Length: 477
Image (cartoon, rainbow, N blue to C red; front, side, top):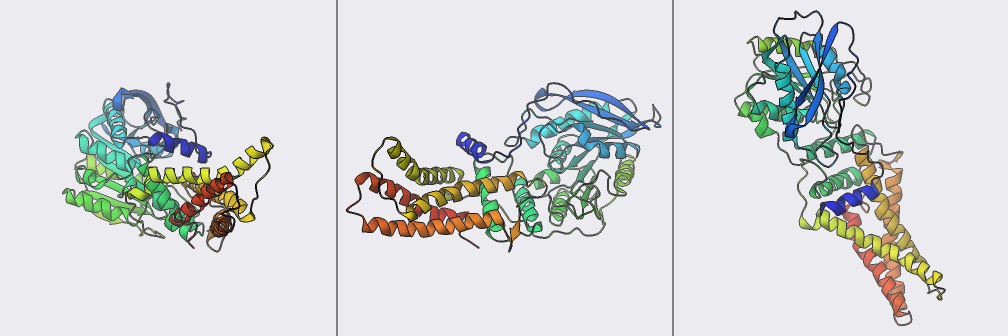
């Protein structure tokens, strides 16, 4: 089942970024600003994979004075280099922490494959490496997880008493599929899109790809893992987070920690900050290199208090974040809307609509006399085929550009022009189905048998197209 679905994605989603191969060598060490020292380290991650990173420490830190350490766990992305987190690494190092930042794995991790458990093993390998560094107190090493790392870091912490504390940034308390569907639809809504595209088409597409095994860990529930975390937790959200629902996630995280009896958690909301707690001048659309003011200070002072035996009691501070729309549960599909059924419908529609002109072309190449063709049949063939392939191509384009904010193109009356055009073709195809059926009925006895078969297949495609287009929102406002 998964192979044909992957083939379908490859055919329809040419905009997808290439999957990178597993790195054979370490990425180039990042440039280190003045006042910091860098030490290159290697360690074994999940499955024994050799991984590479850099430990940053303040140059003024006493060489033999035991100090806290922190391991940075990346957000989503294949083979993300350590340089992507250098703003955080530098900021935390200047606050007195020894910071290990490493290159994310690409082996066993791709657009369609990943394991939070394996990523947690990578983080544990990094923790073990940092605990052996000179000047680092092995009892004072914590983990920091950003975005996807907000699912990974608690798994690592729940497995090891060697982790002294947990810092989460842009963490999500909801299942990945629900979060990602919200992020893309929220981006579309921010661009002014309303109607069936955001209410039906995008959620249905995510359900389909998850059912086909192309969305890793879609229904992972982070609450049981968070309830198993006993270490003090600092959770940070930007008030303009556009990728994690910033109003819904904090209560879920708090509820899970409370359920496990963990009362040592601190939540902080940073105004004017985006998903990564970086400064953003335009409500979370643009991410600046600079961290939100006070963010690095908070991590440094909080980690210092925790590792000194002064874990703070529950505290929530900062302005309330904004969330334009609520998330919507994304449940597994019923059998009739499963990936296999959607694939079967897609194949049927393409064959039915494409066979009509292909047969005509073959007859012409063989110099056989042409058969009568109605304008309605031509419209159904061309319009139906364009609507089917065009809608899937456009939906996958939105999916691939939805990692930050979906880019729907020009929007008119709450509908992207491309979607409006596809909806127009869908309506025209339905009308052409009716007209073609009437024409076939009138010419039932006079048309050649081969032509009746060709028209019958075309009409079958038209009949299937109606419920298919309703399901995908092409025939809805």
